[in-house]
Length: 228
Image 1 (cartoon, rainbow, N blue to C red):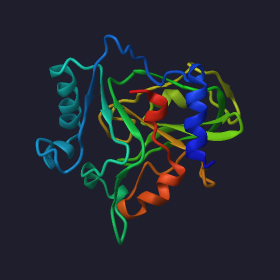
Image 2: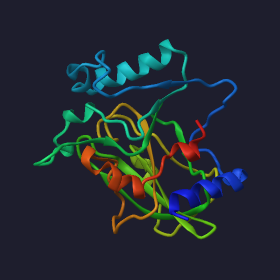
Image 3: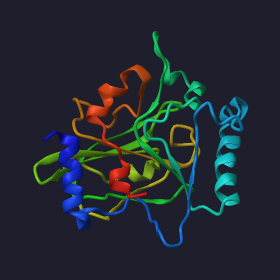
């Protein structure tokens, strides 16, 4: 059984073992799908290139549609990364998003869906990068899984230590504002990995389109855990 199937089987057999990542009531809260592909002609490069306008655009979308969060992004081929050279490479730019983004106000609490330990953390302080990022390690009946939380507040990294234990549903962070989170509208980048590949406090959240199959092997769909 490959690791993807192991994860699916574990989640199916242990539904009570899955906690929340953000506060969400399926009965009352609404989610708005945010499209950041070339199909979204409303979102101009001028808006994307101005962090306050971009932040206002996201906030206005959520308010206009009476939604608590914006959602989307796993394996989405995005055009918004052209705003930063952080995603450029010599042969092919990185545009394929590997996590799920949950867009909401700065200060929104973030939780861990599984018990585990702190693997690593750091402030990836580059334009378009994660900003403060936390990575947890989980043991799911013999299956090692890592969860990544990007675009956090800097305060979220205070008091952490490698191997520090965390419990399911424990608040581990808050969303950072656009001055500290890599200069993005406030949101959580949530991603899962089976192997950290020697990385610490960081793991690619965006890859080249040509590398999709390579990364899909190591990066399962976070929607399996989020449940929405």
